[in-house]
Length: 303
Image (cartoon, rainbow, N blue to C red; front, side, top):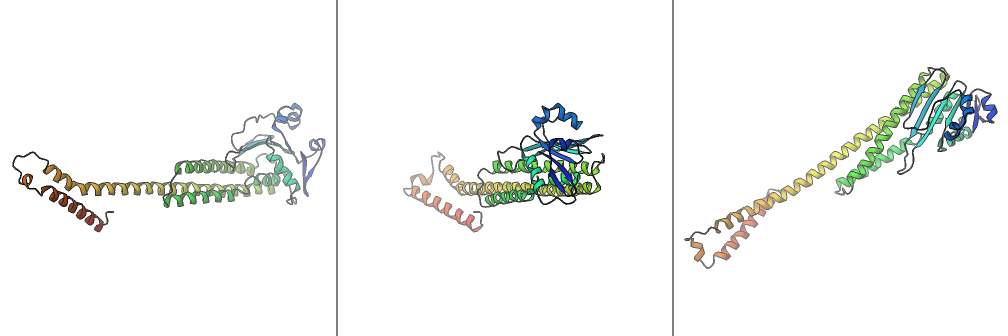
């Protein structure tokens, strides 16, 4: 898809018009770019972009090269990846997933057309990939709150798995926003002079938005750590309860152990051996010891 950015908006044009004018924008397949030496020759750029691992911008004397990797918000889905070549006269977006091309189409058909320039086009284009991220982060916060409630209510099944997934997700988006912040800073510097002051100011706005999202993810990371501390506290409370039970049982049966050890001695002259009621008396004494111990522990609120 080939477009031209004018002061009144984004207009769709033919390929030949795209190469013969300034402020052109196109979104093409990465595979098509790699297989077309003529297209690379017209753009004057030979940078390779087969593998995209992060969001970054490289400013050169006559062009800017950038790669973008947008983490998936749906578990099991693929990340969105695309690359950009920016010169003084055109913006070329390389995309095999189709997401970046759809974003360009959305901008071309949208209402944000007045005072459009290459810088503001890039601002709106990149903004489309983070527009709903605040809602997404709020959803993560709700998920953490649900886990916290489950922990406090004693439902701690699969806590580690659930929390590990959220920690990895938050970490990915935190690094993503930090990378976007660096990208926005590089674009706002406008070292090549490709963008107007209006466009450079737009990148400063984008940088502020990415900073806010990074701060929000940092708060989520801290929230996760707090929930983990709550979980650890609940585990320790349960362990303390178990130790209390064991201590009560040990203390209760300690006198009985003493009685059993005392009368288990094989002395020849023990007065109780010849007494016919010795056995019932010992049983009664043992029951009284257990009852007295339990009453004492209950009164002291040991259990």
